[in-house]
Length: 580
Ligand code: GLC
Image (cartoon, rainbow, N blue to C red):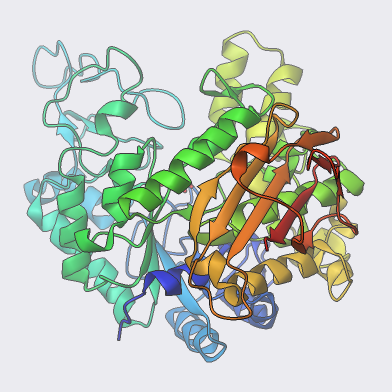
């Protein structure tokens, strides 16, 4: 049974992302599993979240930690059994939480039976993948050059020569992840059946991996301006394929979210407008590139906060104007921890007072926006990047590839490690810090990846029930979204804060017909500045006179200058006020 989510439902829901490999290990093999998740359902219920998005646990050779799927309708024994899964769905349901699954439909693993049959010469399955002759090939057996200059996401060509096929196959991610050919109707039907299979097992929603990359251009040609991305993101048939998938799998109106790589606003409006019957919401990533130097993830730069403000404004107001819906997030399993990124500290670092201020400020910043917030495991505890001392401690294929690419380009090992420290996807994949026991209580064995060194101070055990802890603060964020209709249902409008506050993001949430006793207008102020600053709201038809402070990350309210109305914000201060 699927229920249709209204915008109010989406606006009052909070999703929690579980990276299963690092969440909780129930059997001591060092890898998280389904029973581990089951053992933490009470914790998740107390946090108040409504949906649990679990990253892939399907059979996989784990070249890309499960995003290389070799069987879509089964469970890898490392993670548990189908019985474990069914029980988890039922137990989560009994606590009012729905399970969302991660569907990786753009590519399979090379180990998938479809690719294996293709390799064995079965032409039917060869038509499932994107196979091409090499450029300049003189005929059978001569690879020639890759068909185009496109680069894969993890570094290097997006094409791999396969001698058994006598062709190159396209892989937009790791070489072990051949892209599926969505122009083949049989492929689309198979994939819709996969989604339906899980829906029929009681799954309440889906996250679709890099789903805007499924429709490749009609003509395969070199990208003369870049690495190919702009040619295959939001491709020619993507909307049509999505509508068809949603219709066939019977998931229209469910909670669904697409991961949209290198996308734009206009397409995201279309992906998420209810009348288009595609998805409920979209993840876009422009706000998480403001610390890339010239768009290059592997070159460090300080976060550009004016740019961040501009991006949030464009996506908040633009999606609202177009009738789209945003997924709100700072963290996931592909991102370094935002608290390390925006806290001006980089790398690891033990918690200090600015750490706590930064974590709470970031929480306020996204949790009061229009859309559906996502909490990534450990964010609610203030988990940071681990700052590993050696490249050998990293596991991620992308990090290892780029470490090598940086060395080849002339960086010293120390310089390359420093970049990996700040940019690795493993920064967000360290074991969940449950307590002060060895490995943060994540496992009784040896974890597949090391815990961050601050686990004895940043963990669920020490934060539980402690007034002012990050965990209690996140519980409050979740509660307020459910209580305040201006947050779940209100309009959003960004406001100018004057030249004295270049690193402050400020917006209003307004609900003119809010019921009696509920605020009609909320003002949210978030300073990304590690210095004090002065916010001037005179241009914004907003006055803090008679305003009521609902939430903040300092114990008391900031000072307001009576004459000018300017607000003096302290380093990384954030607050939410109900305007009179
Ligand atoms: C998405 C996933 C990422 C994975 C990639 C390829 O970006 O979030 O972890 O490596 O797709 O499937």
